[in-house]
Image (spheres, rainbow, N blue to C red):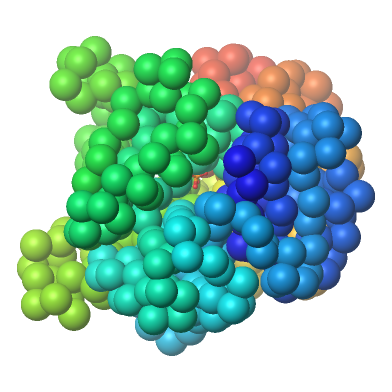
Length: 438
Ligand code: UDX
């Protein structure tokens, strides 16, 4: 099938390459000429494991092309809209200007029977409004909502073998049947493999996405709230998480206490959901998400406070090695990154921050030129008065406490991700502080 993808960021670029890998003829469109020239040359414009490999193999098969000209989408039967919906400047609501621009760019190239498929995360009610615009712009063209649940770092696998597929279809039964048939063809491989499929209406499909992210954010902030309590009574939140996680109804995944969640999705999605619920007069139903956000932001402050405390309040001109910048390992994404936030706060207190990260330095340098960076873990650690681990990259998890001890000025470490073995670090002479670990 001939498919177009409008918006080639973290979501769209992976979607385009994965669809081509599955045998579809794919064209990707984006207004960002850097992204498009990289993708057209078979290079990934950001770090995502396996993306370079599938770009190369799908490109070699000839089924994948990219352009900054919206006319490239003409002739495709299914058009995925995968543009960003960031937090609006000065508020909590989602900024839908990229979605609006994508629909405007698409409409002149649509033909009757074409299906526009929304993938971006949007406030509930958006799909119905966009469907009306599509129908007015091209009578006979249709719209469906098909939320995306991929995780950065696992985006290729999550796209090719998703754990579920959701179709939000038009109310009109004939249109719904045509839209479903087209989507079934797009996802034929995953459906044949038995991937669960939920077929529903627009508003449910839109809500599924934000509900899933709100639940995940809640799970993380719940365990971080337990970390706060653990801190005041000397309990260990990692053992607590292990113990409650054995209950299959709770589950151990997403119960890792630490510096909290970040990234381009969870933080802005819970805020946009709150704003939308308030618009609908239902603010009280999810008012708890404000607390989820507040708990999350407190954990960043907690890490900064622990560093300050270990340095007896004398942070000024102390060298602090910050291990990690991306919002999570296996990503170069620094959007709303707790790690970067901690680095900036420590710098603001006068510390000589030296940050190290395997992939996120170029992005961090662009947005935060005031920080000092190094690609070498050893350089970051040499002469440090304190070490703070904020993104649990394997290279940091595997550090040998004795080796690090030989580099630093003082053996003080804050483990903002609870990913080090406190006994091993203490045995090597370190003063270790974790998150909610006594
Ligand atoms: C998330 C959702 O998981 C995904 O389904 C959705 O499509 C997009 O948003 P992503 O932002 O890639 O994906 O990252 P995720 O793996 O969910 O992690 C989000 C944040 O939570 C990271 O900062 C991570 O470090 C943090 N986290 C995760 C915790 O602090 N503790 C945990 O136990 C798990």
